[in-house]
Structures are given as C-alpha cells and as structure tokens.
Image (tube, rainbow, N blue to C red; front, side, top):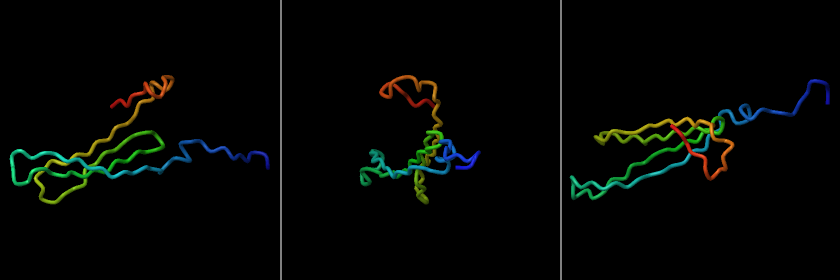
Length: 91
C-alpha cells in the first residue's frame, strides 16, 4: 500500500444516498358514510441511513377529498449513551 492510501471510509460517505423504503397502510373507520365502512390509506416510510431520519408520506389519491400527510422526523442523537431499549426518537 502506497503512502497516503487508506481503505477507511467514513460512515457518512458510505451511507450517503442509501435509504430503506417500506410500504404501509392504515384502515380507518368512516362513520359518516355507513356504505363505505372503512377507508384504506397508503403510506411510504423512508429511513435515511446517513442521519437516521425518517420521512412518512401518504400516497396521493386523486380527488379523494382527504388531506394527505407528509412528515419528516430528524433524529437527535442526545441519548446515544443510553441502552438501546431506552432511546427515543425526538421530533
């Protein structure tokens, strides 16, 4: 290995642009419209590996008349010394 060459790569470089993506849904009751019964709302959950942040976005449905949700939750790393079972995601 030549002088100055290194195989070390910082985690923020190796994880940049890498995202875990999940599909999710919820079923909510619709008491106002008995014929409908329930409504299914679909979401995409993205977990960004580089900074442990999470984005939850609702899949858009044309002419649904429902306000659609998009949340971004950055994670603060104040409590990294705490055991994993006692760590919390703060918004």
